[in-house]
Image 1: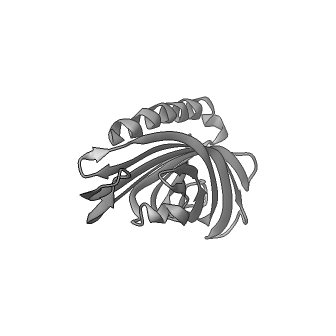
Image 2 (image 1 turned 60 degrees about the vertical axis):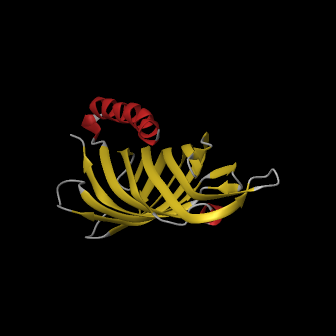
Image 3 (image 1 turned 60 degrees about the horizontal axis):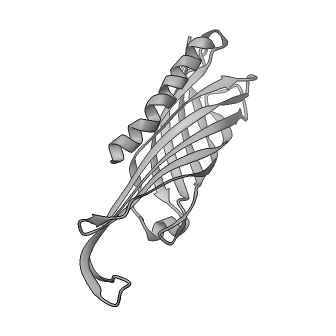
Length: 207
């Protein structure tokens, strides 16, 4: 289920990104790809406390000016945690002994804006923000039984980091940053799927 969920959303988004890039290649549209590690925050930590090491973000950015750009970004994070066998109340006056596994996948699709604080130098700090929708697959396994939930919710992201240009005649740069992702949910007693993230990747022009 998790693979179908992931690829059903990523495939059309990447197709849109490639089509847009071909249409605007003369304007030095920029593509970025990053590896992410995300850590649960808020009530999300009560459901899964392990970091999500299976994460990435990819997107397009159009430079409105030398320092300001707007774009479209898609991400993926896969959280999983297995808890030791315990005895749980079944809500009907009896108990059950079982191993509980919690699994959450998030695919945020965001419209983004980014501002580079300085446009010269070896290291260029930047700040960014994004807002859009978050496609969520949320599941809890009680032994072999599960009760999956799928939802589409608001997603908001704040970001700050550094760009490190690789040469003086292209916008190609290494990208290192940190994010905070606001992700309301309200299910299974979890009010949000907020998380902190760190990322590293590359940005380069499509031309």
